[in-house]
Amino acid sequence: MSDEMAKENKKKGGRIALIICIIVIAALCIIIYLLLNKDEDKKERRDVVVNEDNVEEILSDLGDSVPPGSYQVTMNSTWYFENGTASSNNAYVENAEANENAVYFDVVRSDTDKTIYESPIIPVGKHLNNIKLDKKLSAGTYDCVMTYHLLDDEEESISTVRVNLEIVIEN
Image 1 (cartoon, rainbow, N blue to C red):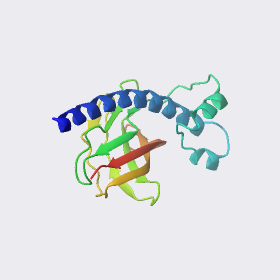
Image 2 (image 1 turned 45 degrees about the vertical axis):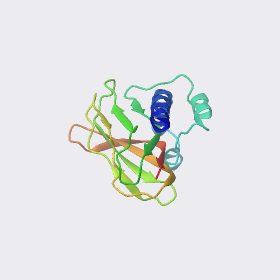
Image 3 (image 1 turned 180 degrees about the vertical axis):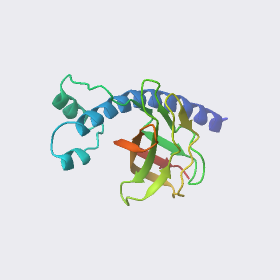
Image 4 (image 1 turned 135 degrees about the vertical axis):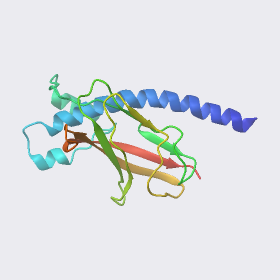
């Protein structure tokens, strides 16, 4: 009975975390897009990864400007996997209906720069869940960067958005 209660509590906690993460990630992606399109040193812009620690600073730098063509990301920022080969029970990525472009993304481990997941193309208004990593990972917590590739009508990448992602392998 305690295993069932623990699973139910994990589900409730995951839903709350998902809602919070969706809001934070959407704001972060708009910020990243704005930063990448400012007329500043291109190298500086490419090195920016918005996270919970720097979001306030970046928002204050941007002021009230939101350019047309911004991209909204809806996802949770921590994905849990029972083991290194299982599908995640909470990973969720949506290409919001408000967007104008299809998208795909890659997940890269921050410590090794190795790609551990390559998504299929996600059309506007569609989502992915039950995500299974392309590379098996041992139990532990992994800091990663997810790079979204916005696509044109010929499915060529026209810009990218990077966000932090934490992956937790439980067993």
